[in-house]
Image (tube, rainbow, N blue to C red; front, side, top):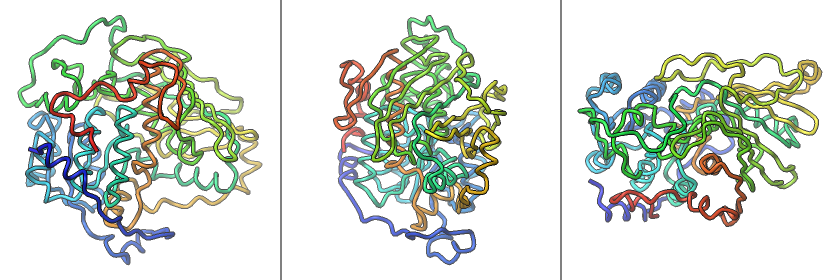
Length: 472
């Protein structure tokens, strides 16, 4: 087991940065000529069922991993058996702390696909032990957790980090970057982001007045490790296998789940940073325990250098479609969106995506790697010949992480890039939870008009025995 002394000692260590290949766009052929490109990365997977299995399969397709260990609190359950069958020789652990304690010298990197509330302690322990970290989005559940993760990564520059919003290595990323550089996307004043698919993870009564009743624990489940640093809850099936996403104590709702796939390129290339105001404009099904059935949240971002202020409006819920501009056309669905373990999701009236308004142009985009188009179609045809060439991605998100571990590339969604976006989502969740308007001082990183909301930046104190994960 990782002791307090071991953990704090590891967090105090720093090392030199990894060598990278500056200014080069590499392709599959040129990789073979770069030292380290063909080296397999020794890896440990933490969270191996459902979405974790999908991520494991994506990494397997790279041919660049040597799987050392599998870790899951539910080893022995049906949903973890396929991953175990893929790597029967890998060491198995239920508790990630024992994984590091007993097998830490055998792997170079971890892939974290656990519920949102446990991303933070696992990632912090990995960084403390000098292990590269690929963690599913959202990066963290609270503002403070994301802040500490960014600080830890900065303190350990030899550690490679990547957040799992895989569209950040696909066509949308490179198109957005190229169109900003060419001045096609400029003077953006407003963005509408929307996720109006069915809320697949629950259909519960919003008049809830207490947490679910205790149920018998499944035989294979290590519930105390599942809880990690979160306040103690009695086990109930409504927290488990994807159901956790809707609870304030464990997940980040639709905003954290989909925002990272819809707003990632907007946030990075428009240099939005942190908002000065977050306002709940609409909520249905508001309660103290789980996310509302639908919500509209306004995020207001200040002027940055020569870029005007931007209002980002978030819409979720079946009954909460955003206003659609003239000439919008058909709502397409990105074929690269991973399936879920909850079954097929019926197609929505408006598929997840974004509408970007500049002073002169309007853009329509989807989610994940979907590219933008200029609307209306007549305007797109008029501008087609003057649009810049968009470079192809030299590596998908999983390859990008592994190549960065070997010093060949830099990750495209490291903690330093994705962390502020994760904090934006945390501020949105506080506004959802309190159904309130919040004013935020981005320099002091404090909510200035609501002391209770300001305390929620940190969240509930960690459970006894987990305090050291929150100390740098």
